[in-house]
Length: 406
Length: 233
Image (cartoon, rainbow over the protein chains, first blue to last red):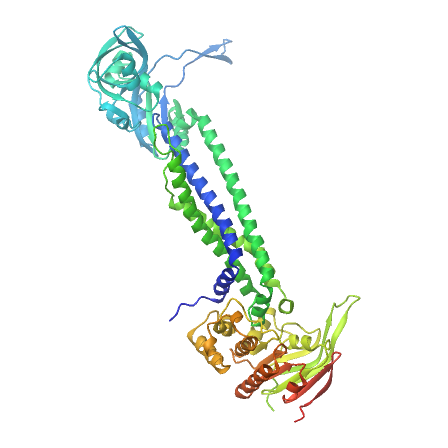
């Protein structure tokens, strides 16, 4: 048996095919609108994800530090009021850090915890000395905070005994190559001779110049923090859940807990503003597309007056006529969303080939996520339906006698 | 005599009701048409023929009086019921064929069935092809109306009016824009279907020659039935 369309889609499609020029025009408008929306959404989502990824490439999602020390000075004997004064923060360990690390690791959403001892030092070689940050880490655990192994340009990210991992800029500044020796001197007078077991390039010259990774025990003894850690670095499953996780940890431990979202508040505000302007553009495009579909269909209803009258005379009900025009709107929206997604994909490919990062890599990948195509299909079809509503109701209300006579 | 297909009693129609320009175009029409009757509706322009036909065809509602179709009083019917009744029991043939230009001749003939049943089916297609064959257009079934001559278009329109085997055929000057020879053909077709299916036909015409070939002539003057008599043979 032949496949036969029901009345409303049959007539709707035939009307669309008959008004070829009009149909092409609204399809072109809808396609363009969908393409702009899909392209923008995909581009901005990707760029934002990249920026966040790059920022978080060298940062822990959440950092736990000891509570800040403050001076409280009582101004009367009863101690009813006190003046709170800021004071210089010395390097201290987190009290009971093993317990806190366990507590943090058990918190839902937290995927990794790494203890870190960090403090200031000088890297000295011959006559040259550079100010650095000594980082005592457990290499295995720290890798789950910052993916150091991806940044290694020489050696491996592993520390033991006096083997250390340093950044490429520091290596250049001090003329150090793999397996060379390097002395670190600390403000407290201690010093140690290290052997370079790995060189990293984290993509940030400042950090490449400053970070020296050594074992946890070595850093602890050099910084006079035996058995202690200066901070706990955390990784969370969903990076945008970092703030709530930090809040919960702060509540549970009364330590200083900061998420990357606080550390990079300005960046987040910028991303948010970008999303707002993106939404604004998208809303306007949707409105323009809707107006386009509606106006073309209004004209089509007037042109099809006679046909509507004939169909009504042959027994077509008002709701059948309503459906005919609603379907036209929906079809335009649906087909426009498919064509628009194809166009957006093409645009992404073209722009991805044109715009490149400093390192020659494409600024963004030329890929289109299925969820954006689905979003476009749903939104465009709904917009098509809604914009057809006014013309369709007008068609349904048409008096058949008037329509036939005209 | 069987139940009349249509029955009008004291039917009136006025436009612009309740305004200073209120005009009554039909003043109390009494008319009934029996099964198989083939009647002509004649009268000068402006006598209310088209209005009367539209009211009988349920395209317009009367202002007063009673209209029954197949014994069913239409006054109490809802808009949706009226539409359904119109689609299933009345076939229209308009002066200017009024075919749907976007559809083929075959699809045009199937359209009343598609509307009544929601979609086409094999049976509807077979019936439509039979009807096109009967009006001599089987070979043109897949052509669009624009590719057919005026006479052919009107034949398609007749086939379409017959698609659902309606009890009543209403024709508004079906031969009005055709040459005499073609007009005779079309008229003969209507007459033939009338005899075959025993449907009632009411045909508005200006052509006294054609009116004379009907069973009955109803003459409308100024919204009154001036004369209603069997056609003189």
